[in-house]
Image (cartoon, rainbow, N blue to C red; front, side, top):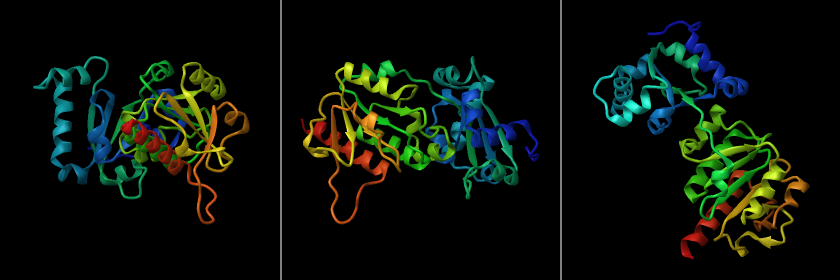
Length: 284
């Protein structure tokens, strides 16, 4: 059992949670909590850490998955898929740490007692563009980790096929963002665009209609047809879309507001648009 805060692996986890630069340089990130561990694809897991308290009272599903991972690494009985996932290019290490050390490693106020170091996924924009009737979220400078994670989660639920983010959008591998995705980070394709305007032009050149969520939108969001390939532009929480970005859209759309409300939270607005597209596609 690891009891030292000076342990190399413990320091690595803390650096990965605190520094985006470390995540970029290593291609790794940390996923914390029971749900995030259970949903994690085996071929993405590099290390698993559990607290001593958790190890003594571990849910059966977690214990079973850890046994499968470590059995595959050690060459014991495991399915061919598990062996392929956990041997060869990498191995999965499993460590029990003292509860005090785990609290230091954790990014939450009330740690659940399990976290894993994960390999980052890499996706290609071309795959998004070539999907059948793509439904794409294009995010400009979203700053709140919780908002970004919620957009991923809502997007998966509504059938969004990919997320494109500006380079100044918050890091998708931020621990708070990862938790907010509730597992969607493992399944939702995403890319960061070096030049967002050029990327939007590429969408239009590939017959993907682009709609900008905008307070001065000429059309109500539910008056447009989203049954073909389409993309929604969502701006930052404080400033919305930049003028030059909104001008690249085929149309500006608005979500009508009653009462004295001026606008919706970025994640809520994105969810409304995603599910309107899903509704139209379901009943076409």
